[in-house]
Amino acid sequence: MGNPSILARLVAAGLLPVLWGVLVSWWTPRGPGTGTEALVSIAVSLTVGLAAGWLTRSRWAMLAVPVLFVAAVEVVRMRLRGPTVDAPHLSGFGFIALLLGRGLHGLFTMLPLLVGAAYGAAVARRGDPSAVRRPVWQWAGRITTGLLAVVLVLVGVAVALPARTEPIPGGVAELTTVRSGDRDLGLMVRGARPDVPVLLFVPGAPGSSEIGSVRRHLAGLEQHFVVATLERRGAAKSWAAFAPSSTFTLDSEVADVLAVTEHLRQRFTREKVYLVAHSGGSIVGVTAVQRRPELFAAYVGVGQAVSLDDADRSQYADTIAWARRTGRADLADQLTDLGPPPYPDMYTYEPLLANEAGAFDFDRTGAGEGRGGAVENLDVPEYTLLEKVHALSGIFDGWDVLYPRMQDVDLRTQVRELAVPVWLVDGAHEVPGRLTLLAQWHAQLRAPRKERVVLEGAGHRSLFERPTEFTALLTRVLGETRSAGV
Image (cartoon, rainbow, N blue to C red; front, side, top):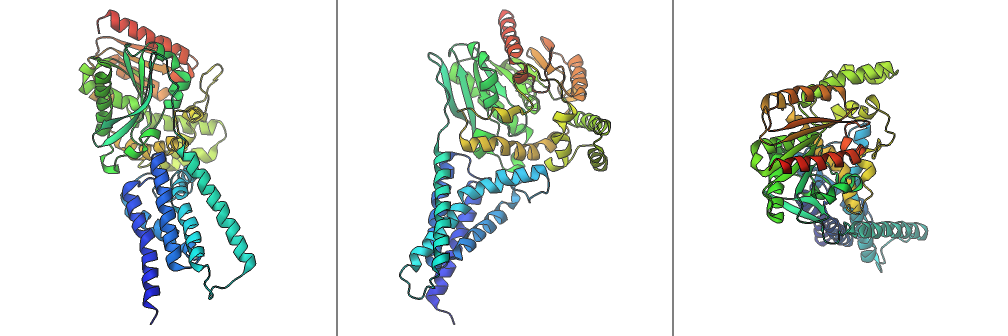
């Protein structure tokens, strides 16, 4: 029978990473959302690795400890949904999701576990006469472990650098959070003066972040409004607020918009707030206005969604036609085999999403924003390094969870009247099927005042592609609503 003390040490060494994995799965199931969470993850993982390595007195702990940790994490978080936590998928989106999810999580947990286990085992074996000495391998191991430790230090320093927004003398400029239910949502608030009207901007895709786009392209609005840019649940600054999959719904998103609106009204002592919503966020925005019209001075929908199901079916047909017309037979066959949407998850939508920019491309000469969309606007100081990564992973998981649940929304039947002035803004090069649906809804919509505006030379992200024209429109909206006594 083996030595009881050795057996006890091995059991303890195995339990430590398993227990840490269970705790991590409860605390940060999709990975750290803030720099503080990342640093704590690194520190605890390093400590667990050191302890486990010392208990085993074996370099095999470098392999065993991370494996036990990963097994515990994956088992506990099986209840979650989203590309960054689901089983790996063999596709372009699947590779990106693997890097954004498990790859990033591994930097803050598996890497320090490995480094800690290596140093813990080395300390325990020092002076042990029974240890086998192989100088070449010993020095190779030390060099490798040292390099990994340097990488770990650099990662810690990188995530510790805080985000900031440039001050506005005499105005308001801050990065803050707002409580909605049991979650904290990120919010950027900027305005040249605190006494001007308040405008709340709701980004497009679920889990999306547009702080960089607003800062780069719509700074002109800060002269006329206090501009509050919301980070939807799962977005860069709201990653830790990603709701459990079962509670991430249209109703929860609407509740977030209403909670932030109430916060802004109280903070700036305003009776009403101007609401601007883009793309998929426009369904959330319209629903919020429908439920609580007394909170809003006007609604501006940009790239307004009307029926996701009908829009996707039209886009599906147009994409197949484009693929055949341009010699992309493989894509046409792939889409034909899939059949028309709706689909159950993001990976099934991948052929449509990955080819939208190509199938509906246009001349972007003079555009404020290029083909890269939100991605090309990440290089602003308002994001930490970790938040820049979550700006992408949030869209993946948020879209995958929420988008299929919104397929039964159709504003043509569900929202026939809004009790506030409405402006609906499109780019002239918007996806044709979306323009048709918007025209149908606009024709039947009843509102105190309604107007469709088309921005020439722009596509789906018209407010960022033609920011000067969009800022001028919002200035006109402000003047018209004020003169009407709204």
